[in-house]
Amino acid sequence: MTSIDVADLTKEYGPVRAVDGLTFAVRPGRVTGFLGPNGAGKSTTLRLILGLDRPTSGTATVGGLPYRALDEPARRVGALLDPGAAPGSRTGRDHLRVLAAAGRIPARRVAEVLELTGIAGAADRRIRSFSLGMRQRLGIAAALLGDPEALLLDEPSNGLDPEGIIWLRGLLRELAGEGRTVLVSSHLMGETAEFADHLVVLGGGGLLADAGTGALIEAWTTPRVRLRTTEAEGERLRALLTEHGYAPVLAAEGRWTVRGARVTDIGPLMARAGLPVLELTGEQGTLEEAYLALTAGAPEFAAAHPREV
Ligand SMILES: Nc1ncnc2c1ncn2[C@@H]1O[C@H](COP(=O)(O)OP(=O)(O)OP(=O)(O)O)[C@@H](O)[C@H]1O
Image 1 (cartoon, rainbow, N blue to C red):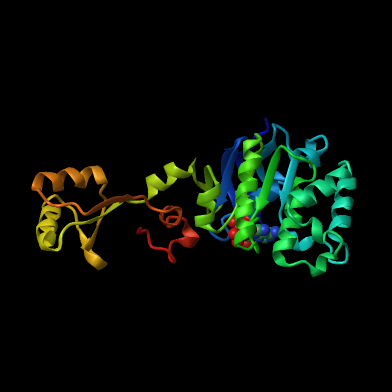
Image 2 (image 1 turned 90 degrees about the vertical axis):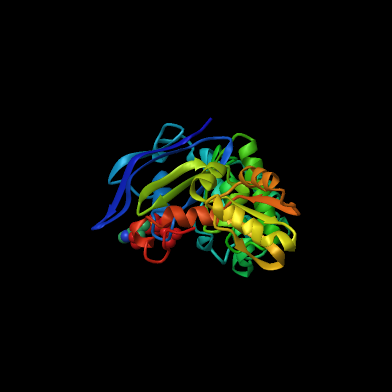
């Protein structure tokens, strides 16, 4: 089993500290989402893990070794960094053949990954004629070429249509289900919540959170309850909830929203007061809300997003 371990990692570009004493581990068998505002240091961290840049201090290892020390790295780690970098004059198939040869990967894998990523039908067209989504699928095909135990994918859903996004979600889950280590950066919170079991969140080059997706949402959002009673009892409901320290808000169609409350808080109160319950639903916050609350403290983000969810 291959873990990715980042330990006290720092990278300075002149006066800019892009990564600042970062420590986290990416474990096999689950999809880890890699989040953070623009400039938080995600790409730099991925480049350091892949040995494309040298750290100022600290280490990044894959299966206990720095990438450059790995035997046959293309078979251990697959990466999608910049799908735009594929040469436009080559066909998709030729591009993958070249990568396979360079990585000492059997040529039969080319047809397999083309099939797996749904671009087999376009494989003999020049890459310059590929749509953004097809380029993205080709980049994912390249990452999968060596059948690697660890995958690092930078914004893999970029350019994919809704069907492609659903396909990608399934693929990520399948890869993790096979016991692989999967690290995926994304700026789409709704999408990340759908596929990531675990999240690593950066801010200003440092670690803001390293937690399960559900746990992070719970810790950084306020639960709320939506409820409805009869029209005649609306004011009695308001008085009851206010008396118990809540601030109920009446929305359309006689529905009330109560922040900071759970169904188990409100249900018994209403029952004791003899108020008819026409609807009572608990709502969890979203990853987007949790992310905004969490990153609001990160220096480069503070002004744009006040800490309020
Ligand atoms: N080669 C470089 N030379 C100088 N500064 C750099 C270099 N690469 C990154 N930086 C700086 O390091 C910081 C982190 O950048 P990085 O690209 O890692 O962030 P990111 O989280 O990937 O952002 P984004 O979501 O915008 O891609 C930024 O301030 C960036 O300007």
